[in-house]
Length: 130
View (cartoon, helix red, strand yellow):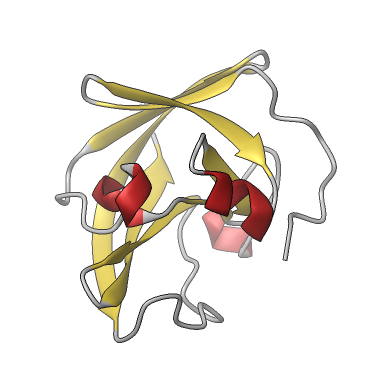
């Protein structure tokens, strides 16, 4: 299901180390297109608040190069830049649930959750804005 907040994320990028990718808002069609990281749900990046359960979620298929989303090492810094500003997030935890494309209800935490399949399972990296 696509995000309920219609605010465009045009011109938004995510950076993990030297890897950078554009971010678009969308649903399964955008994920399957394998072109960009997809903001699947949540508030506009930079306005999230994990303490109020307002988590932004970025997803992508592992076979499209987004496998890194699934199990980023704790402490990894991730930067998101948009026309509204630039924010740095830090990974505080990971979780892997059995099954590819497993239901994610209750598995979105922190300010930002990154999700991708990892092998036969689905992995999540949880981040807080710094």
